[in-house]
Amino acid sequence: MSAGPIFEIMYTFSSALLYPVILILLFLVLFSLILIGEFLSEYAKRHRDRDNLEVQCKGLRESCLNSNFSEAAGVLGSIKQNYMVTSFSRDASKYLNDLNFPAIERLSEDYEIKMAKRLEQTKIVATISPMLGLMGTLIPLGPALIGLSQGDIATLANNLMIAFATTVVGLFAGSIGYVLTQVRRRWYWEDMSDIDYILDTIEEKTGD
Image (cartoon, rainbow, N blue to C red; front, side, top):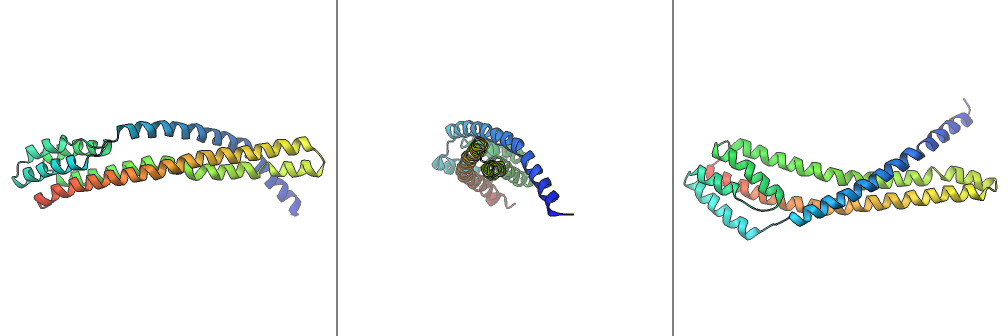
């Protein structure tokens, strides 16, 4: 089989990918704008008070030391920090009241997985968008070169316009995903640090 048909098949296949690539890029741009809205909403609700957490963990430690786990569960459920920490404390208080310490440990792992899943969204946008932008840049270059060889300036200009536009769109969506990923990663490190501190406080006095 000659090389000509193989190249023709590859060219046809790559050309057929142009419109799906453009549609996916437009979807990623829209999705990245939605992620910005979620990010701003999450930022407005973040409230990390380390001094207050220390005071509450001190009360939690004393209650556990006295084996007053009902009171300890109440202290744990009243912790008010960032959303993830507050939600973990509220859920963990039910297990502490039942003296189900392994469940508290597993709950912390579940919250770590939940944070990782939230990071996956922006990671995917940050990774896929530039790739699709590059594909959208390279695919129209074939027709553009053909137009140039035939002296068809209009075809050359149209395909170059598509190539540049997809590059910009891909980099735009990718940069949003990258920034949101980095900031959220730091947020969730802080949240997991607080959750681990609460967990260590419980385990310290329960001997679990």
